[in-house]
Image (cartoon, rainbow, N blue to C red; front, top):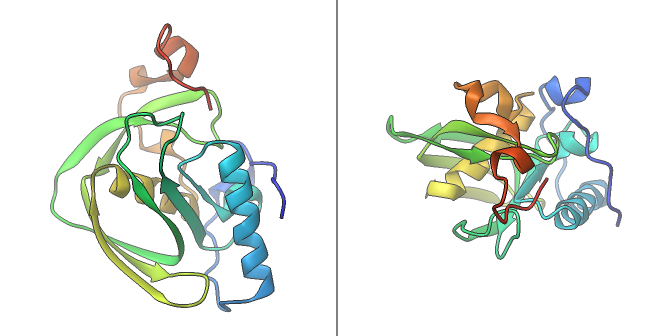
Length: 177
């Protein structure tokens, strides 16, 4: 369909709670997902949420294969996740670097639960039920935060580990957002 403009941190819509999807397998929902796919692929994203392209609905997509923004990341299967529910498994939290298409050019160390059970639906209304860990769990938490009006800098606990990618990783082969 189309590559959309990604809203950047400071846009009021990114701070709002997204509305649940009430109708599945519709032309409008399929068009939204296609726009999200086109936009995510064009920007080498690991995922994107509907609010990031200006649509306040509980829709996220994510998936990581070979990605220049995440060269060392484990593979995450491509997923359309609608109206998600997240349940954290255990208390183990890991800190790691994150970036975001809505916070271009910056990275920060964010604490996230390492294990997660998530449920929701695909675009056809089929249920999704997965237990995940590691990078997959991190990506899901990051994308679903967008549906609650939360951007990753709001979760950073040590602001000395937040800054511009080209400064933090000077001389390293890190692709900028």
